[in-house]
Image (cartoon, rainbow, N blue to C red; front, side, top):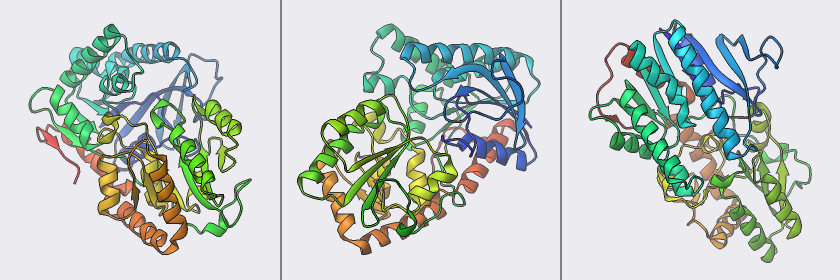
Amino acid sequence: MRVLYFHQYFNTPRGAGGIRSYEFARRLIARGHQVTVVCVVHDTDPLDLPGSRDQPVRRGVIDGIEVIQFNLPYSNHQSLPQRAGVFFRYAARGIGLALKLDYDLLFATSTPLTAGIPGIFARCLRGKPFVFEVRDLWPELPKAMGVVKNPFVLAGMSVLEWLSYRAASACIGLSPGIGEGIARRSRRGLPIAVIPNAADLELFTPGVRENLRLDGVKPADFVAVFTGAHGMANGLDALLDTAAELKKRGRRDIVLVFIGEGKLRPALQERARRESLDNCRFYGLMPKAQLNEIIGCADAGLMILANVPAFYYGTSPNKFFDYLAAGLPVVNNYPGWLAEMIQSHRCGLAVPPDNPVALADALAQLADNPGLRHEFSRNARRLAETKFDRAKMADRFVDWLEAVYQHRAAPGLQPFA
């Protein structure tokens, strides 16, 4: 099977972003399939491809994956209109490939929602099987966050969502809520599988606190780490509120570590400076291998999001599964499927949203109870091994694409078990 794989933000382990598509493409190849990934230029992984970066298109092979990269620079620091321009230019160029290249199945993963446009054309004009993976529900999520308010834009996004689901041969949702959202908006009987993000058990492994090396962090500090984007969706002011509460209590031994980039990072750093929150430490993007050296040796992982109900069952954050693989107790500040999992598997603490006192209490509880930390750590790694092993998730993904191609995919929503 020859798979044309559209992922705008394709990353490799040498970059600093999520590598779900890289790992899934590699598993397709390992099982005898061919994969061509179509992506853009972005700041989390400057792919090592032949030719000048000024070329309109670069092509090359990375670890067996054929990669086509459009010279469309993208960054989270761009304005919304700038990003929207990249989305539509990527989709337009992708249509050309979808109508011209020789392949058996087209796979597209969002966000953005426009990533599915080449699949719509491939399905409608060439009759190619089209599998659409939904990482966030659009337009529900941007509408709930207040990022997009224009009713005409929201209506257009809603039409595109409807068309994507109707054109798709099958869909994949990354969380239970996403799978249910697809089922509500799609045609009756559309095959839908829930395949969450996964834990890389080889890349992320438990370490020991004594091996943690971060400038400004003392050996006796309790280190709680947040990794990932610093944007509106992440609600990281909640962590600065918590840092202020911890300082008020005199808990200078608890340090909050921020690793990553994003549009709001400068504002967060300025607020920390202005309020003398010296218990917050900011570090830039790190390749996955380097990141493991940090989170594998930290004391807790912070699973923080803005208090938006659409997030409760409609997200599948990479960082959560990285924390589990590294054996980190997870502190979560919003309800939903991850909070329920944390509580039922005793691998961390879940607190109410918008409550810096409760979040500070949870961090203090972990800091003061090494035995509890060790129990949560063991349970986190065990959960990663038994339910979210990336190798098993990748096989589930390949099985699903093969079933769709061979017309064996069962109709209806196939929940993650």
